[in-house]
Length: 183
Image 1: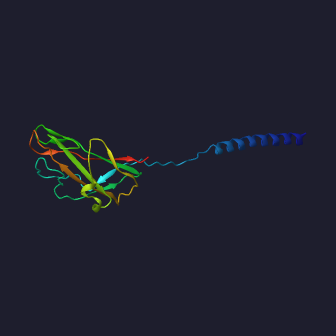
Image 2: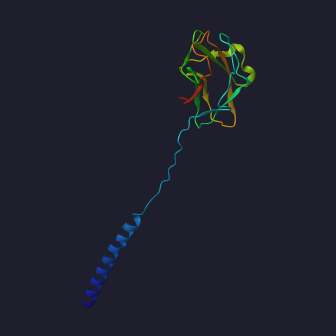
Image 3: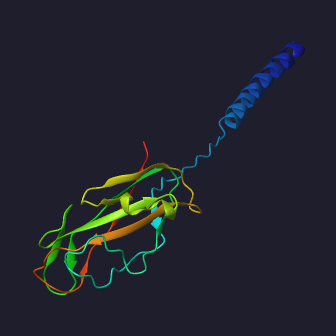
């Protein structure tokens, strides 16, 4: 009888021990796993070698005037995705006082023409390669791979002056280069 009692005590202890073993396994099996995730935001960007230029003083009703120091402006794709690059012009506004010139495809009273020429190398930009800007984006280079250390190409500009103006003085306009992700 004592042996039977010892046997039951051992069985009870084994059962209790099993319970604590299973409990310990369950607790340690409920640990933590980690998954590292990373992300890079898309950067769609274009840069130019200069941020301003001047045509100086030009006579009315003159065609295709180069800016003062007619240097080619280098364009760089400094984003991190393939891009399409567009260009558009804008109204020319008088710096002091009122007055503006409309951007047009032909010169007229208070309307001027602003042209651009693009080339992968500067020598590609010839007088026949210039196109008139509009106030809508016009894509001139497509699917450019990111490489901030190498230029995409070069731009040159020409301005044709209005035939007449209502207001004399200095006028300013903007040229917009717009980069979009290539699809």
